[in-house]
Each structure stands twice: as structure tokens, then as C-alpha cells.
Image 1 (cartoon, one colour):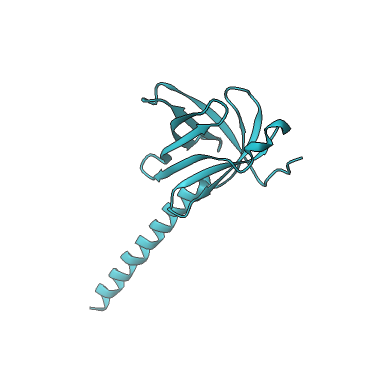
Image 2 (cartoon, rainbow, N blue to C red):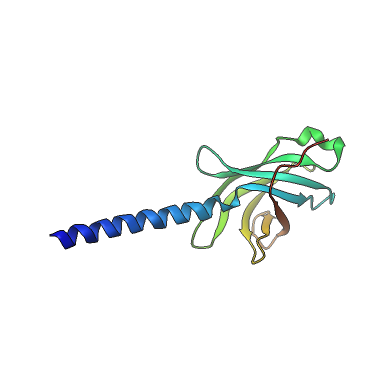
Length: 142
């Protein structure tokens, strides 16, 4: 009887550790990233965070071009969910305020730790991928 209780405890605690590790991997996308607009080539900083509903969202928190300060705090990434099997954030959308288009999107870290963000219309083959670099802190907007 004692062995069964110990075995059940081990399975329960192991399951909790696995769940905590999966959650930790899911939250790895949270933070600040330097990004270049694929159309204008202007730089910005993006903050990705976990929303109240458990999905991941992103806002613009710094812009290279002072004329675009009106985009600060603009939420342009929405609805991303972590898929542990594919080790990527899927099912989200990315909105480009400059052209007004919204694209289906997914995000994945490459082997160098850079975030690859793919936006597409219809099929993922019909799209573009941009690379974002993690930054340790929020930039100060001037």
C-alpha cells in the first residue's frame, strides 16, 4: 500500500513538473524584441506578453522614427497560443498599421535564439518571415 501511495505521488509530482516546464517554455516568448518593419525598414521595439485569456499579444513600445510615436502602445500581435509539439506560437494575427492589413501569423525561435515571425495570407507559403532580436530592457522613447 505504501508503495502505491509513493508511486502515485511520484506520478503526480512528475506531471506537475512537466506542466510547469511546458508553461515556462510557452512564456519564453515574453519580453522585448527589436524589429524592423518589412515594408519601411524602420526599427521598433515590441513587447510580447501573456494576455488575461492565456494567449500572447504584442505592442509597439519604442519607435525609431519619432514621427510614428502615435503607434506607441499599439497592439498589433494577437491570439498566439503555444504549441509544445511544434515548439512555436500559432494561430495568431499580426496587423500592419501602415498598410492596414492583418495577416495570419506564427512565431518560433531559431537555433540562435532569435524570434522568427511569419505573416501570411491564406497559406504560410504566401508570406514573409522577419527576424526579431531579444533585448534585455525597454528602450526609452525620445
